[in-house]
Length: 339
Image (cartoon, rainbow, N blue to C red):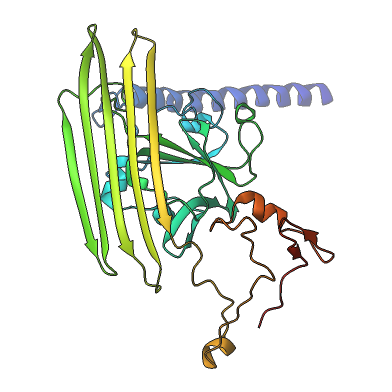
């Protein structure tokens, strides 16, 4: 009796498995048939090509290689430095005239304006070095006006300079590129261009700028020169203070071969102003009581009596109590206290 029960159980399991397989097979065939014959039409999309572009109406985004940071031309996205470049077109559109207006378009910059004279640019509250075409220039500070309109572009690099420039200031440096008849794309002007700008304003401000570009052909090669002139004769908000400066800048460029070119230029600048006239330690107490704090030197620093205080006389005057005897028996023993 147990043998018959086992045979019947095995037969029942085999029959159940066959029945389940027979029930699943029609469903599988139906699903495959539905996949081969879709109920809706298939739409084939055209090939899509994505491109990137920017709406840079004022030319603030530089797309050309720059060699200011590392010494050889590289794109900004491939240069691990913070660089801001301002071209002449943007300078004209924004209306920038002096260095103290660069903060409007270059973040993190500031220029000390010493009684109307804007000289060196500061980056992150540190005075920057000044370069022209990659060559270091004398620090203008607040003694020499930096006329922004005479440059083709202004490049501000934040952080220490590259080793190719030698030692430099930690804040960064500013590289000025003079105007040239050769454009940034490498092409020369096809015909002569020029402009004259005159400015008249309050406090007897009178300023004239002249800009002239002349393309040339020398031995069949493209060449040309650029001339920029400025004359300024203005007074100031402060009494007995004025600003007179004259600037003459020239540049020459010529293609020697398809890969080599020569560039030369020069800048002449004469400045006459009242310097730090009007400087004082101002606080609310001095304003309320009409006080003016002042100090006078113990002796006249014009030791040779020629009417000028030379750099040597300034250095010789830097002695503390105990003094130093100069020609004529004058002894310097320090400055008088403020009164």
